[in-house]
Length: 448
Image (cartoon, rainbow, N blue to C red):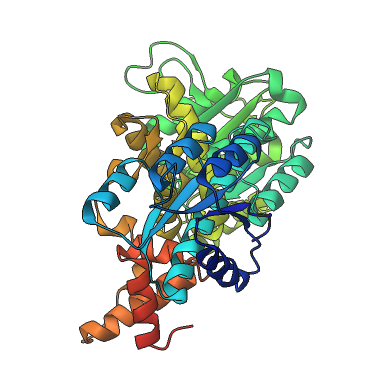
């Protein structure tokens, strides 16, 4: 673990305290030992512990009372109950009191360590959630949320090109946030006090698009009873963002090329050009090089656009940003729907990290909006996520051809472990099995 984990072991049996201490030493953990449950409550009131491992049956104050006291002092503390008198009733009571886990004496050291590792993973996740929330509040690029290497590179590129008035080509898959990048470029330019106007070229017919952008003269076509100013003129001094430029016709591309080269437009039906003062940012959701090769995009226009190209990474290439984005959208929709959601369960973040996100950030935002709407407490849990298998397993876990059930299980466990960087606790939670079952299956399949 990166940060020190403070552990308190409470048991009136000296040999059991020492056994737990020696077992935890295998993970380089140094717990504080306490043989009196009353003293344990005093320690919990004064010292910041992350994890309590306590016996259930003890003189004076039992493990349930230690659990309740620990939760009063620190609601996020994790408590593992250990007992040689385990019953179903006591286990149920412990879980109802928000115990993290429950293990019976005598226990196998490996089984005990699996439970502890799972708890430590959860503690680290809680710390990461807190760090991410703090980071969201101080992020520099407002809506461009992320601190992964691809996002830092993107932000650095925006900072370099924003002050310039040159045309910029944004390339990225649908849902990656091309308009947000365009807005950030606009805000970093001297034109930021003027208008920023986005136009989706793929959503407008060619005839209407030309009239909307270039304007027209009276009588230019049926119904044109007066001159109309186009968007190139209307946004004078500002920035015009042309999205899905790859969806335009070759004829339109000729006219756009003239705008970029000459800085002027020709209204539909006009005979004289009009000078314009506008910065143009264009975006494509497909490779323009491939579009040129297939004859659907003009090569000379690509050359003109390709002076500064910004590639926006898909979400699957910056997975470490997913928890940060999830908290960002949770806060956004908290405000919109007047909710009071304060946390996101670790299991939710695990599932979000495993999904491939074909719809990118836009899809993640939709999932989080739904989760905020569906949540009936101050915490988002897995029941608030869309109930489909794709939210749990990445597509590459699907195997082609015939395969035995055992082989599929081995592949599933191995791939899930790899996706979670070997975190066995998280893997057990995602697969819906106990840590002990995971440990046995790993031994069965000789997985490290």
